[in-house]
Length: 215
Image (cartoon, rainbow, N blue to C red; front, top):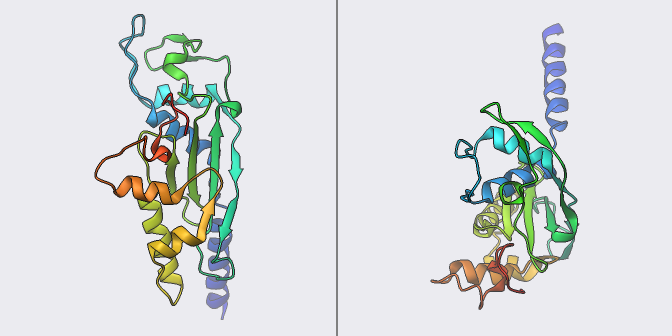
């Protein structure tokens, strides 16, 4: 009997520990923005610098983000318990700033981050970045503004999770008609990413945050 209670206590500890795991949207957004940045090549840059954990550490301390949480504007699956739980976050030019920071990088060189070409986030007045985070698994998806877009993976994972937890299978058409969020056009993303050519004029949802065009 004592061993039985020991097992129960151990399981409760495991459940408690797993319940404490949270996903930090700020940290994920910074990682994705840093990975999205192209390598900088310009006069005066230290050629010893490389895109590594040291540079990322400087970047994450420098960049200040104020994320907007986007609302789900339509969800015809609300009444169903098997709908995957996602949160959506947006970064616009109005919610991004670069602070003053100096840091010792890997080659023992003190670097002032006044140089925006190295640490800045490319974003124009009409652009924004949007990510989705699965609140259960912590998986993240780039949905807007990045050089790559994970919508098709997001859609596949959403449908798979829905199908595993429910009796009925969810079609792409049902999802596109019944699940919508602010500032992101899922229908446009689906058509644009499944077309033969990524035409950003025809599919403005595919515009990057650095593109000098208005969506």
